[in-house]
Length: 164
Image 1 (spheres, one colour):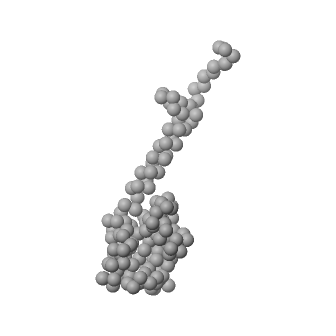
Image 2: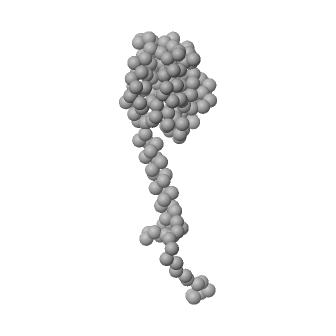
Image 3: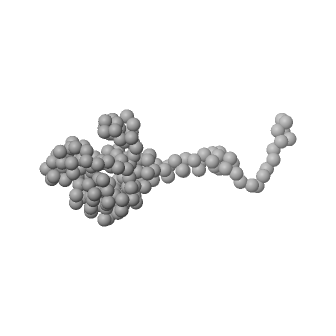
């Protein structure tokens, strides 16, 4: 006993114990989890959407839709949205879905991750209340149908039925 403090030693390990550098293990684990989350958000299906025919330029999509006669399929999505990520990875990344969409639609992704962005203002303008939201616009820019993310078979049925 020194200065009224009793020092004890315990061989059991807890998350509060310090590593060799004096940093508590629970803080190291928390930082590792955050870093893994950032990597997961940046490496997921979002990066592949652009490679799969999804554009992000609204004005260019309007021009392309008018020139090709293909309706536009607009996906409102965000990095922080688990349902969006699931829809992208389990539905939009399927080869049969990709081919169907690219062959029939001008594809536009509107990322509303940043609430202060122009994309978020566009989502408000078009009354997008939840995500992932899909909106089909005809070649003249009129909304033809609207729905939320869904399984692939439901997506095929919805789009094949003219959005009904």
